[in-house]
Length: 474
Image (tube, one colour):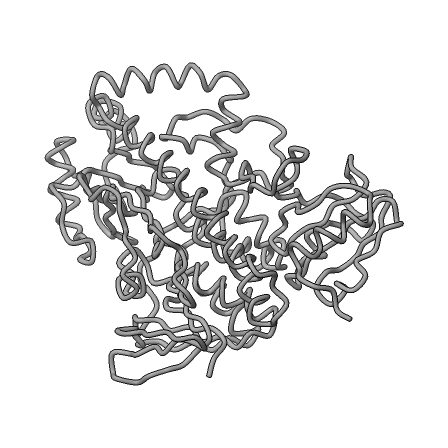
């Protein structure tokens, strides 16, 4: 019997498996596909996800396969630079091939002791007071204490649970890919400038050596399970721009729609949902993968605490309470970006107004912090603005804060050197450092890096240690 079975070995499932293994949870990851995806679509890790990689000691491994880009120009593709002084030591976008980040996270989970099986599709489940029975397509039955559906927007786990997935179906569809274009750069630039006046979903972005990223509206809405062909791109480029630009040698081709849906619940008993199984939205702003990885980071330590037996009674419920509003906000900002990409006179008037407003630093900063995930503040009750937010990778006596979080434990950072974690030392580390770059006497960090307490009073600290980390060891 496993502690946790995870359906789906994409970025969310692999990240969750690794987080659980940091706490010696027995994990099995089931992946429906028999082989990894062969296409090399580039995805972007935003600032918060880059920070999470640093917090688990993965950033160097990930960064060597990625390409840094400025952290600006994300919101509705409005070309504004990132504001100066973003609250992060990692203020950039990291572009990386999707199969590479999935492979690195899966490798990380397996190195930590997770088991993974391919060609294993979940077709049934039933739960009782002690666990979940998972049935596979070949009739095999597996048993675990918990099941987490990380199996994408068409999640079998969500459907088997009967959890509603309200929202809007796809109204439009867009083709996206990377390929060689033989047309001269000046012809491509002129065609893009001309076509963009009437087509919001049209981009030809040079990557060098004749390779372009191509975004073009599709002829209609089709089955996204069927990848587009180069001929589809030729047809649509000719229809919209009057030429196919000599497109050939595609690196990858895909399609996306603007369906927007949010699961009514993230948990039913011993079964939970994360990533695209819980929320889908257009890829505007490049937030999807990041949202799922951050779901896993929030859920992992809480589910591990439940299994290890020290979780406070309501801890696992805070996963939905914290992450579902974040997803709802992402859905709203992608809805807004979709409208701003429309060529109608009304949306274009609003777009022009927003372009003006983004010249104000506060507006630009707010939108960048929203897209990159560093503006998230969970509701931990009344307190200073830092309470509920993540703490940046500040300098400490041992080097950098995130280097102390590799084990996925809580951390008390104490500038007074008078506080203690006492009976929680098996779950929470302690660092006394009066030189730490903090303007408060002490902070308690959860394993996901969010600030759970601020102050210098031991009795108040003990109450918050109990709130997040359960009863102290005797």
